[in-house]
Image (cartoon, rainbow, N blue to C red; front, side, top):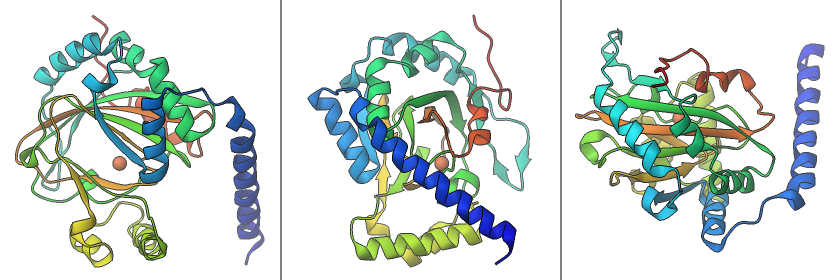
Length: 274
Ligand SMILES: [Fe+2]
């Protein structure tokens, strides 16, 4: 092993140790949750996901946020650039628009996320996203994991009824036993070999049977809390466009801060405040 590699290993170990100590120290400072919200945090810790609805969450700023989201969903068009037959999604960064920001910092929401992440959190922003029909399994349609932090949360909102035609979100629950862990390990290796671009359905079937995959169609207003760093997930092929919102949270010292800027910088279109 070279000195540089040894250094890398030592640095990783130290940063993991610091992370574990921070988790331990913050445990007593975590906000107290209501019984309903405890259920969400518990499900996130066990399965990495919790599915509910805007109606059930009943946050005070939902109506204004939804009204603005629907008005953008109606005007979002496909970007012109098509990469080798794959129609790219249209993404708006709506973080600076007060309707979205206010929803993202709703105290109850932040408290749930902090309980799951276990550290003080950072809310990075909101992407409004329209995905267009694609028959080929490429990009985020490949099975993958996000990489921003050790634990993170994306809150995904469906802006209309999402059926198989619209290509719902699909995931694989976190490993629950030794065999699951072994399969997850093999998948992590396959992801590494793909340069973390992702693996397709055929490859995934060779690790985990399709019967264990969880497909998530849902009505308009479906809310998916998910840790996309730890849960294997992807969008699915679709014949009709799908409009969604993605709210992104990590700890306040994410492992890969450079990946978090896209939620509030100029990487994507920023609609003007009206
Ligand atoms: Fe993802």
